Length: 326
Image (tube, rainbow, N blue to C red; front, top):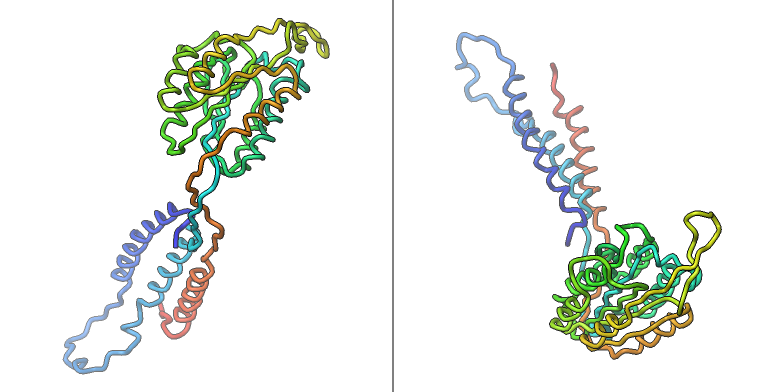
């Protein structure tokens, strides 16, 4: 048996001052009377109520303890299962700089990249997949996980402007490497998507690629953007557009792929981007051991019943058999 919220057991520490208060109260509440001699009481039988006088308090402690156990959510976990499945560890590394709002891919580069990535994730249910985003800096949006529902939700939340603007390809790649380097999978892959050239960060993209190569991590680089110029929402005229030049450092992206044993792709439209992900999806897969669990049963009912019975019995004794007369 395990507990979903074991930190609730800290509440049991509150029973210590409660017990101390009860002992102090018992000492203060003892009645007394003066008699000349107690010899007449020697040999008098002791009522069973004397031995049971503390039982209501003990029952109350049991009831409180059961409440804490219920809050901690006891669960049975006898359905763990080891299996071998096909899969690899993949980090999606996505550029979220402001230029990703260009609309040469529909509805724009970022949304097209998110939609295609979501379909890619849905098609690989057994893989560990994580997500790193970067612009002027980088951070891990989602670590490696097989819980793709959470991953998909975090992917949907991505938008331009989440972090400082710019294009730190080296930082984005290095962050992904740090997430994959300790992986035990035989096959580790980074899919890096960008629409620009490295202009921020202290880590050069080629340096990050050499680190990835050291850890046996293949990197597939994808450049998104049409040839020439792309329509971009005008910051001066709502609803209007301006044309911005498409500047992609294809040489560096090709180097990154070559150093790590991956491949470079160029996507000039949404259809081409989907085709690239489909091609990557055909990569070799390696067998990995996965521990899955199929069922989790809540076991709080027994403890709740014990607590309720203890509370009812305490009330019954306190106001009937063991009732105190002031």
